[in-house]
Length: 634
Image 1 (spheres, rainbow, N blue to C red):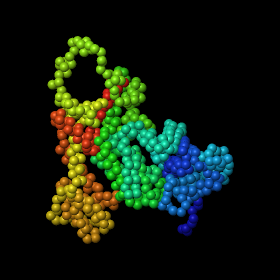
Image 2 (cartoon, rainbow, N blue to C red):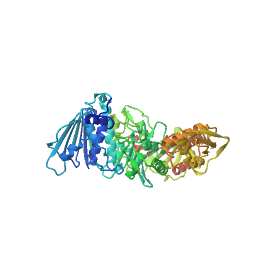
Image 3 (spheres, one colour):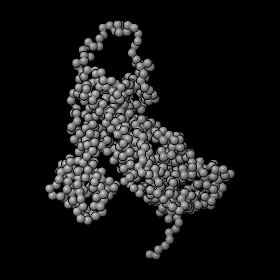
Image 4 (cartoon, rainbow, N blue to C red):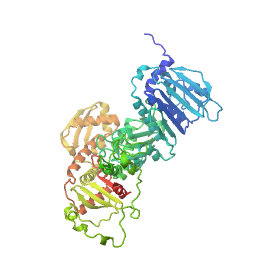
């Protein structure tokens, strides 16, 4: 068959297959254009999940007639000129508008700031109309109707209207977090209106709009730099986690991305602190010279390639771990919320206990709502909701507390016939509890006052109480001590009587030899054995008998994929975690007051003590205001 030039419409439809995968893809491209135009207010209206209608209105710089005529032509853009190594805008390819116009009914109405009139152009199935004058406010309105009507085969692969509407919502949320100075409004008959007012330079306030108000109380600030790369943002404490990775937001030079290298770095940073199947919450922004990152990897621009991926990954892992070491002993505030909800009455006639824990489940966190609120009864319905939902959490004060002690003279004398110390049910020897110690309560985790069921320590703080799981807490302390030992000196190794030779591709051998010093510190001694083989002479003693061949091949795959050999350390830490679990204070052991207080003091000084090795919380804190709400006294 002869070679021939494809038509412009067919070229655009082929490009649309990569650029415009679904209505959310079109929304992303159009919102990026609005932000590049300097908009401070962007309104998005959808119908039918964006399949039948999507309208983006902004107050940006606008376009004149000549700009409109070129804007709907392929590879026409105002954002780059010659080079691709200095991209400082969200868009730059010049493909989005012609791609959308080739598969949908596209209308663009725009008026430049200060101009007396606006202009309009339409593209229907790849056919462009003449630019004509039109009434318009300053800025641009882009309307997309009947997406994929020109390519019916693509239309049948779209999901339900609700799913497509949800995907557009996710796009808006990511863009809103990246640009807190822009006001976003998302509305339409297929959804509830979402309004996100601009927060200016207060990025954490914008994050709270998206991730829920509790994120502010459970976030740790990240601010780090390495060479010419900076990392800023906020990461949640380990016990404040979700059931999927949809609450991890990454930005590179202000561009929202979903890059597997960055997501892997977040997962690695939280290793051994979050249970399997749970995911941390993080909002991180990477800043670097545009020449050091390639954003032109895919037409969707969601993937990037760094010139030095190892540097970026190491910065993320190191910065998060340092932040967790600084403040990671905090437990999520949602633990107390869950405890209160477990006892809240469903109706005046009875109680409906709800499951609770330190984790905040995804999906239930509204925009500014509680990340712990569920869809069932209890806190979210009935009289309990109206009574407790908007109760402010204020510091407890004996002077203002509704349950403060009576001060009337002679009150004790009037309590005739009642002596708590002589009541049979109140005798001290009926409790598995130590005597009250004189340990001061000014410590953050307070002073131990009792041990319940030979596993839970109850401590008194200055304004509340703390309940500690002694086994989980000590398990974490032992593990951190062992981890510190792993990082201190070269680990003990066992010498193989006969070195094991593993055949590998030459490029894998080259990559492994780059990490030979780091592996040697972990007890794995390897050396090159010809161009395509590795000789293993020593293996870590902690691992016992190990299949050296499988270990080396796994490390080679990891280095090829991520340019890091952290898998061996991960195995060692897993062994250390298992040893810590079996070597810690067991449930059922009675502790003396001095032992309990020593455990509390060590928890305060140990990074990551807010959760055990499996990611479960080690303690829950209740403020006196929370306790008073529990008894309906506030």
